[in-house]
Length: 171
Image (cartoon, rainbow, N blue to C red; front, side):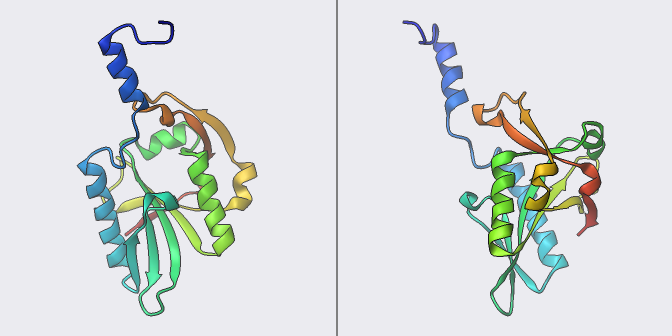
């Protein structure tokens, strides 16, 4: 019996902890992405903004409307924490696997890759933008990012992006 849950409640908790991750946590996540995508469409009308399947590690591709060439890949996050908290904690944490994949795409394809984050203390159309660069990977702090209880995959190696490398933007 060793290693088996002792109660039904413990078994349910363990099953929930090991269940596959949801693609979106809730409808708010979808709405936030849609709102951001619409702001992008309005700010760069020469680009077509397409949602990319999850396996590609980015949320959006910005395609030249005339040539069909992908010009920019974008990853977007909407956070309930504040920008000030990121400054206080020394930077924004992003999973190492996602960061490395985004860096690889930029290096291999030569396409600009951008990371946008909206924080709770910002106006709806204000974001922090980070230009992804593999060159700096060796200069970033590598940490083990834990503390989440939603899913076992929320505890992972992460890089800390310095807040002074973000650029505030308004779309």
